[in-house]
Image (cartoon, rainbow, N blue to C red; front, side, top):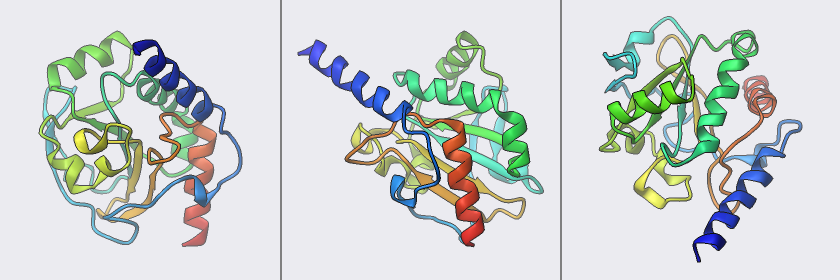
Length: 191
């Protein structure tokens, strides 16, 4: 049984990593709060050893990446690839990348260190922020963790783009950075 589960997860990962291409609004959902709404402020412990609030980023465009956490290697690969694409993110108007998951801070610090990741990650073990953003509505694990959601918050605290990729029936766990950037650009052009 475990082999079947692992095989199924691998198949989902493989199909989601090969889905490059042009922007496709059918590829993702847009949850609530969504574009045009104020992003709920929060304060969470960060991998930088400090409590971090969304309001700390006023004046900057911050890309929040909600993901499934420690057991989702594809999610960590996503962060790695986003970090490697910092110039492209900056060109798209993203000043900061911040990931949020339900892992405890100490384990999150260890995972980021083990994977050589340098961006800021925030610990939300009680799911308060994940639930406030309804990011737990789009994952393989039901409501117990976030799915695979990206939310771009502008310098005034308004959500300008949201893409919830993790939902049924595909349960996307990874997207090529070019796909994310194309979806972001397409949504901004439509605005």
